[in-house]
Image (cartoon, rainbow, N blue to C red; front, side):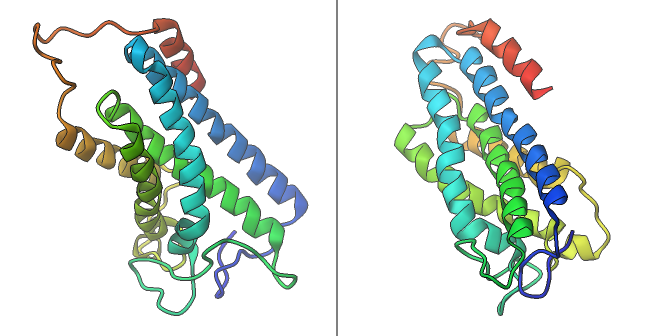
Length: 217
């Protein structure tokens, strides 16, 4: 399945779309896994906070991916370069386009984009104001789509060099991990984290953390 010259997707039949959406739903269960893992690892007073941040990743991250991200990742309009795509913003199709392919691919890639941001939420746990995190979630999804386009977009220089990333180990997890590292370095440890030594903090709910681990597996 590849992009055509106008930023759409080559014909995808109903069976293809069903499989792509099924895979998308499987990936979306990672949001549940991250939510359980992170809420179990933080203190009780921040349990709801971290769960809401995971929800924000899907809601606002999904909005920004629809508005800008898909176009930056897959756009093939005027102005497209090896750095980013242009076009296909505010994703939609008309009667002359293959809606099954566009929308199925949009949902599939949306699940990847939101996962990349959710990875970062754990590194920022208990150290970021909720309102600030809302802004971060919206912007980080757009940031993710640039390197994702290098790997998967028709314009991408990594794709043209023959690089293959079958399931996002580079485009999703490396990008999310790099963002998480930068966030952790900028925010520094939790307030008073090392006032009483460097031992591990008590987990709010180890059961949730283990269930999150199994869900992610």
